[in-house]
Length: 291
Image 1 (tube, rainbow, N blue to C red):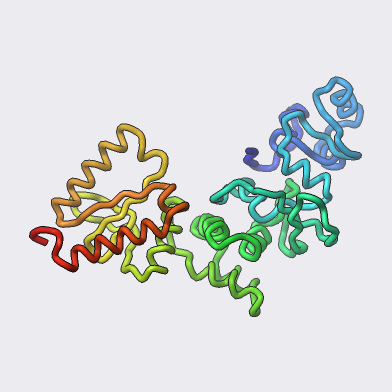
Image 2: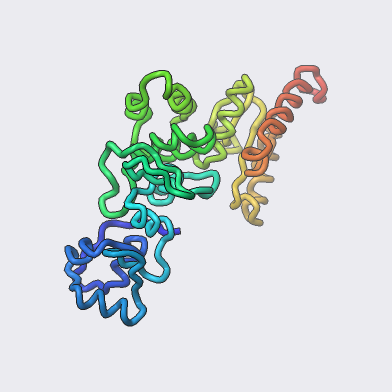
């Protein structure tokens, strides 16, 4: 998936490199403004180095499908379809193309969002971050919009207060409720989702707690049950050994440690919560010896 960098100016850069920095597609007007000449564009098309899928649009053979589709529909990528362009967390790839076309005309296979009202992406056919998140909050299921907003807010790219002001009235109540779930810091989407599940279950949970001899743990429930959320890196040999050492140190400090992975947090959260509740109940009943 294409990840944009800073806007690129022509200078000594060749045409294909320039386009690759723009998702592999651009309008003729953009290319001419960057200093490329019409004969150069036409020669590239004739040689098969570029394609012209529609009038005034030039693409590389490896252009980002979303960028091309946005040009084709004369719209801007938004909601989950725009997540990669702002490096936002996403639970799932976009199942459909989400665009803001601004004319309300239905398009097959496209989720057409309301018109954009904030500054757009500076050089791509992508809505501005504020519109992307507002559209996501109104459109997506709670977990999917939550991880997108969490990743942007904790980086300081936007604030919950700003978004809340943009979502007034009863019709935006569900969207505002998502903003209430944000936390100051989440090192992965698993952390914000787990925190939400735990709070909703009425568990007493603290995040990123520093424990003597252990270091920082992801979650601490009732001040004695450590819950670690393991991403892909935790299944590497060196990390597994480190996690085992930390778990032993936690036990020596009188705390039990549980590990949950992506599958548990994202696909089976209720089973995770039920297990934690069962362990809390066992301890309350004195079923753990000498505790």
